[in-house]
Image 1 (cartoon, rainbow, N blue to C red):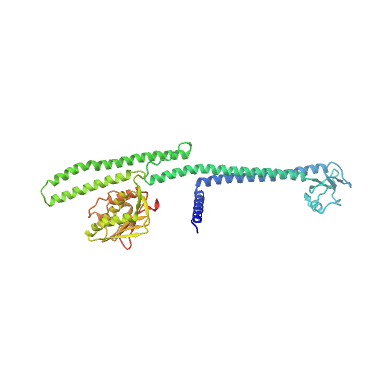
Image 2 (image 1 turned 90 degrees about the vertical axis):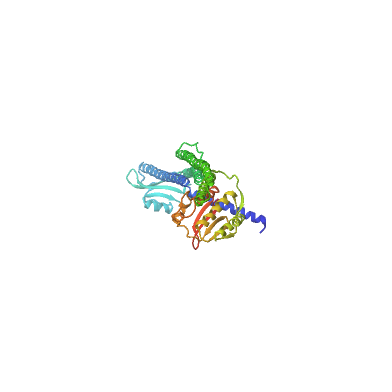
Length: 439
C-alpha cells in the first residue's frame, strides 16, 4: 500500500473512531436521553391526537350524512317510484335493479359505504342508508361522498404533514436544549476531573444561565477556590515550618561538631542529618505539589533515564551486597521533568534498598518505569496508606526512614498526570511503577 493510501485509510479510521466515540457519548448522555424522551412523548401525543381527530371527524361526517339521508327519506312516500340522479339515489328497498352488486350487499347490512371500481353517475364512492319514507315503507337512499372523502384525505395530508414538521422541529429543539445542558455538564465534569488530577485552579466559569446547573457550577467554583486556598495554606505552612527549623537545626549540628569525638557525638550528628533530610524532603514535596502547568517539561526517553539511574545506583546497591538489574522492553519517550523523575525513581530504589530483598529490578516497559524487589512485600490492603506522607508500616519502623519516599513519588506522578501503580511482585516483593499511559 502506498503512503498516500495508508494516510487516507488512517484518516478514515480516525474519523470512524471519532464518530463511534460521539455515538457512545450520546448514548450515555442523560440530558439528551431526557430531552429525546420528552420530545418523543410530545410527538407521540401529537400523532395520536391527529389520528383521533381524523377518526372522530370521519365518524361525525358519516353521522351527518346518515341524518341527511333519513330526512330525505322521510320527506315523502316513495311507493313504487324511484329517484336516480348524480346527487341522490332513492328507491324502494325491493327495487335494486340496475345497481352494482356492492349496493345489494350494503343494503342487506342496513347501510354503509359502497366503493365501486367504475363510476356510477360520475362517482365511485357512495354512502347508503336503509330508512323509512313518510308512509313508513322501507327505502334506501344513497349519496355520493367522493368529494367528502377527497376533502377528508386532503385534510389528513395537511395534518400529517404539519405533524411531521412539528415532530421534527420538536425533536430538534429538544436535542438542541439537551446538547446545551450536556455541554454545561461536560464542563462541570471536566472541571471535577482537573480538580481530582490536582489542578486546583480549574473553574467552570459558568455564570450566564440562572438555573440549577448554574447554581451547581457556582457552588463547585466556590468550593474549588476554598480548597485551593486551604491546600495552598497547608503547603505553605509545612514548607515554612521545615524552612524555619533548618536554621536552628544547622546551629545544633555546628555545635555538635564542636564536641569531642565519641560515639554519642556520632549518633547525635547522624540524627541531626536525618532530621535535615526529612525537612528537605518535606520542602521538595511541597514545591512539587505547588507546581502547575508543564514548565520545564521535555522529551524524556525512559530507556536512557533507566540506564543512567542504573549506572548511578548500581555501585550503591552492590555496597549493600544486593544486585540491581536493568529490564528494558520497548521503552517510550514521554513528556516530563527529568529532574523530578530522577528524584522519584531514586526514592523507589532507596526504598527497595532499605525494605526490599537482595534482588532489585529497575524496569522500563513501554510508557511505564518503576522498581521491583523480592523482599517481604506489602499487604495490598496497605497500598493506599504507604503513599501518604509520614506513614510507616510496623515492619518498617525498625529501619531508617521518614515515610516520605513514596509520598514524594506520588507527588511527582501526580505532577506529570501519570498513574502510580503498586502491585505484588511475582513471586514475592513489591512492584511500584509510574504509568504514563494515562496522560
